[in-house]
Length: 66
Image 1: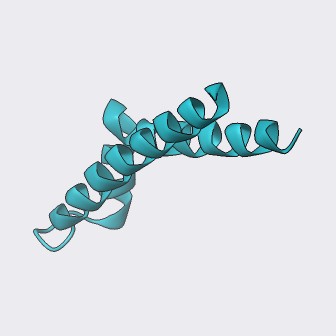
Image 2 (image 1 turned 180 degrees about the vertical axis):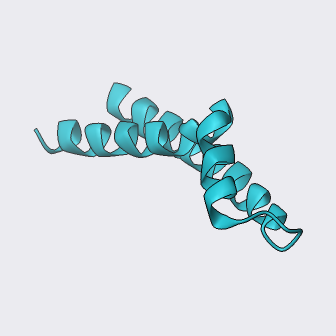
């Protein structure tokens, strides 16, 4: 049961981080270059939620297999 909780937590973090990243993509048509966009993503803490969530999902799926 703990693996399911880990999976759902990872899924929630991945959705939150992915949504924020897609929202920041709206700044590119407003004149932000791709390099500036990448720098912006690196400076925002909430954009790190997506990779953290993906890692939690993978760990939960690996542990569920045992």
